[in-house]
Length: 156
DNA sequence: GCCAACGTTGGC
DNA sequence: GCCAACGTTGGC
Image 1 (cartoon, helix red, strand yellow):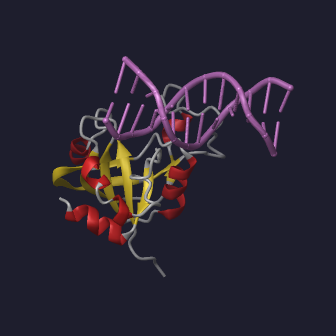
Image 2 (cartoon, protein in one colour):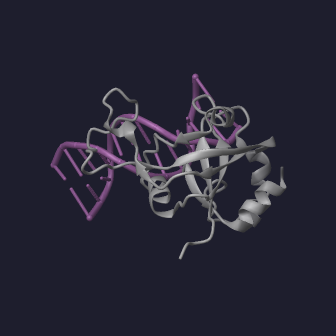
């Protein structure tokens, strides 16, 4: 039995990898996640076909810029094995990889970026547990409920 | 560029 | 197992 489609939000710095970059390449391995909670969501929670809100962080107007979908099951992040990579992890081995990722496929750009500033105005509806609007949270991969997904996209 | 909040590391 | 030190995230 397969579960229902789930929803996620994934942050990326547009200087490094933006929604336009994803549109160009089509599918991208979501490498470089080095946070256990975020990894666990990718490894244990994601299924092919799940919806992804593509979020631009650390930029002039942080916010949701597009929609993507999960395009693979979780598999080891190659960059952890590469000594030359910024994401190299000397404690990771091929026998026991530490970091997992999924492929993410472009779906569409939003008509406009939905700014974090605007999203915050709905923080009460989104709920206290929502990492994007909870103070101090830096989680870069987080689950989104169907209701949150609907609300966020209604702002487009 | 600043800095608050957070996660991880490592000495003890 | 505690916790200080450190590095990183990411909004502003």
